Figure 1 (cartoon, rainbow, N blue to C red):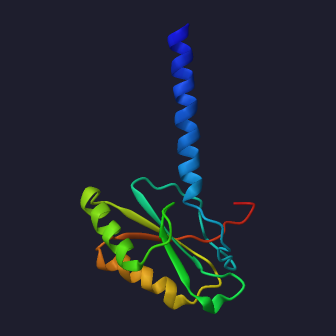
Figure 2: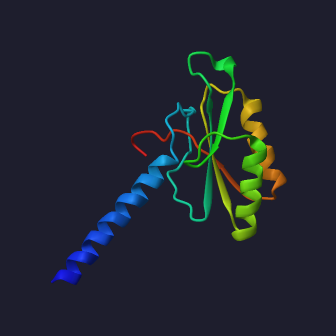
Figure 3: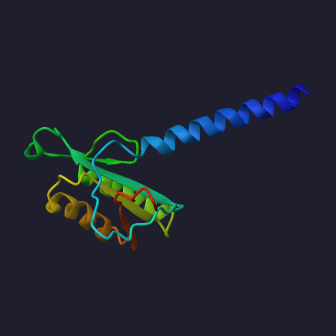
Length: 133
């Protein structure tokens, strides 16, 4: 009975950690809500999430923070280096870009350019999925 309890506790710890890491990728921001959206809630394996958010939400002109998944904000050059290493490890790498809807398109385009320069073929932009979907 004791080994079974150990296994159960290990599984609980594993799922608690996995849940925490998965939620850490989704930093709070206002995602776009397009009219007549065809957005789907999909789960991708072998993916990298890049978050683009405002430095100061009360002053949208203050600047942009970029982060790769749950990592702290970093420069686009550092994100490009991370993508290059991840692409080398996983050739079929996919990228999901989460951008605050208040950002100018040029800030999002800069990230898209970094993804393209690393020859990553699968890129998704995240939008808000309606409640009924």
